Length: 311
Ligand SMILES: Cc1cc2nc3c(=O)[nH]c(=O)nc-3n(C[C@H](O)[C@H](O)[C@H](O)COP(=O)(O)O)c2cc1C
Image (cartoon, rainbow, N blue to C red; front, side):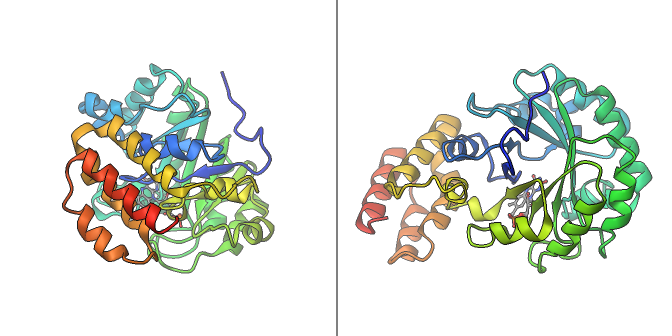
């Protein structure tokens, strides 16, 4: 059944982030009014050849409706097989294609943002996904270009396909993660596109209204500013009541324990670093949690630190 991603006006998406937007984090942001969640990038190759491990990346929480699976790759046959694997899963409402990843290992395989250099190839891959996709929406996540902004050419080319939406990270591949985000380029994309446009890149509680007005985008996608700050979606919707943030962090850790068992402590450290940013004695706290591998000790240490800071 095709689920309407745009049932809420200007929906808020959690950006796919390998190593961060896992099931535990997505489960948490769903408690804070995030509308659409997307899996971490899944290599189509891995899905086809090491299916067991990659299939776990398709696991989702029942609160994730809609939930979109993101795949990456460049081989037509393998992408078709990956889509067929996803078709067999339940409760996946769309397939997104990664055309933004800037990492060399991915670029060397002509995948991720490398596809922005060969738009005919990109179109044929998206066509395969769309033709074989039985779960729901087909979308693509792009950057503005590879070395320079070529958004006009990219959107004109994607207009030949009937995609359900396009998410745009407002930087080129050369801009990696730190160049200034070009919201005017997203505005241009929106004016040209025949489908919905989701704006992405450095969106925060403070600038979200400005980004919506400047780009005229149909929705917003938030990545790094949700890490250490999962309540950002409720804040944007004006629904966040100042509740005890330390309880939220403990809930997040519980979700991590459910998912990763013995590995939860080590994997939760990067989130704790973000949660504690700017707080008094944060560096001592980080040094301490870096040594903890026992969930009960971790739980008490988290509670003690955040309760003491009145967080
Ligand atoms: C650690 C990390 C992992 C990422 N993994 C993915 C990914 O798997 N798929 C994807 O399309 N983008 C990925 N991205 C890019 C984000 O989805 C997003 O486009 C980018 O971070 C800009 O948005 P932000 O400023 O809101 O973080 C990743 C970004 C980061 C920081």
